[in-house]
Amino acid sequence: MLFNVPQFINVEDKIVGPFTGKQLLWLAGLGAVLLVLWNVLEKAVFIVAAIPISLIFLAFTFYRPYNQSLVKFVAAGIMFLFRPKTYVWERKTLKVKVLPVKKNKQDSEMNKNKVITPEEIKELAETLDSRGGEK
Image (cartoon, rainbow, N blue to C red; front, side):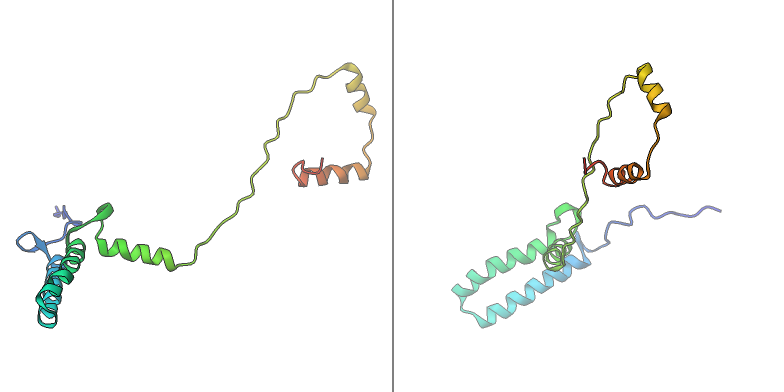
């Protein structure tokens, strides 16, 4: 049995002309704010106040930074400012370069007869635990 798979699920539906529902709400909000300002303020003051308010509403309506709505972008910025930041400290590892050792016959004979004491084992364990930081 065949099923139709939706193709454009990340595109919002257009309601009136080229405008989506969210865009219509922002434009209706702009109209309502301008209507209230028109009735409250004088004509010269209304024009001065209407320009920045219109620009803000139009930016929220049409501007999409990083392919997301400006409302989400501003909300993410506000959340970034007020959320506690977590700093994670990671200890840097020391890079130790191991040089090859040339073996002589005398060294191999001496290693056969060498006895390791418990104090030397303890000192070696401490050196290994500190990653060579003690020497």
